[in-house]
Image 1 (tube, rainbow, N blue to C red):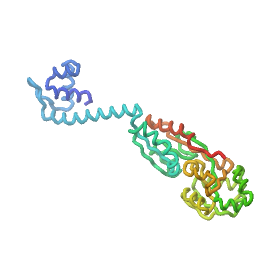
Image 2: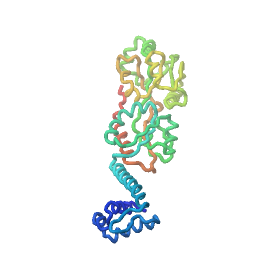
Image 3: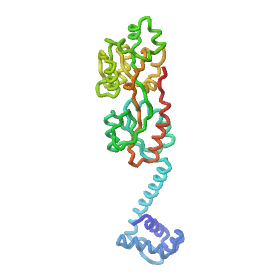
Image 4: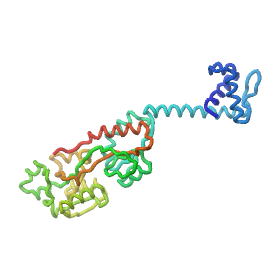
Length: 317
């Protein structure tokens, strides 16, 4: 059974006459009769009572009801595949870390939705390990996260590189630098000597977090052991506590510019110090499985992310 035979059957059922139906379909009576006979043979029942006017048998009446639904679904399939081909419809399953989603999605999703309003979008938020696992199992189409992305068969494109910043309450920097505080703030200490923060309270992310791992690597190189007063799972909690003067923390450059631009102002309650060295530089990337099928909508989203990455601000001190 195929769509063409069902379509021909419905036209004959409407016209109740082979000649009229053949004229409407622009095919010969013989060809049309052959299609109907083939359909009846395939189903094993007669579909029409032959007479001066064709009438449907009971089997024909039942088939007419079902055939109309099938042909309607055929049209829906054709419309949807046309829309997929023309980038109007598709499915996009995005995996992203919690904070990255808060920073990045407002800059790309509204624009993507305007041009792809029929695309089915779903979001899965998780940590680095979860994102890599979801991509490897094809539970997501696209991953936006930090390197390394250790998924065999994934195509990875770096979106940007960002540095970690030390976030220090101004009351602490004022006590540390005393009369040299004005000069310190003017030059922003491009080469930071960590020893000046010896014995100062630190609020850090718990071990296992990417930012904490980068910081630990840097501090080990500096032979510096921070006086950790508190550890947290939430980087926003650490930043908020630093803003309220409780201790020093570390925060990524991208999050600063997107979520806390006021921290860059003179009126900010914290001072910012870029941490030098490759250990404190992270790479944000976008990844997808290279040998899997990706709809044009998914490829458009990836392209948009690559284009917009340059707009995700970086700090120039």
